[in-house]
Image 1: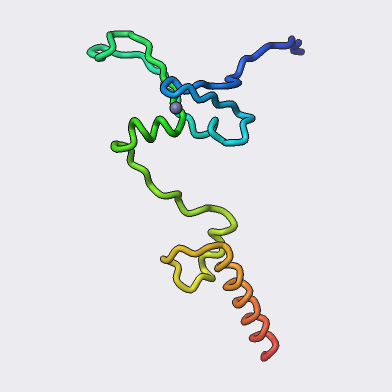
Image 2: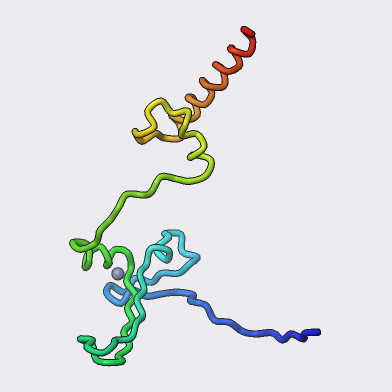
Length: 121
Ligand SMILES: [Zn+2]
């Protein structure tokens, strides 16, 4: 039989951008917390920062764009998985981007067509 005791665990409650000073917290309404970039690494042999040096950096998304923007490779969002993917077959042009609003009428048209075929039999 196991016995348990309470344990205090710390979690990051806020983060300040090292470049501009923007304070970001998980409960902020602007969602900045979820777009921040944090780096934490140790230099190895031959590191320009020194062998074994410890580097840390927290940047808000705005400073990431402003400092690293020219070198970032930004891809558009991937196609959604899940229920929307199931409707792919009912879209008339499967290779063209389609909004959810466009998918729904196509799905209803297909259902109505199937219903009509059933009545004719
Ligand atoms: Zn910043």
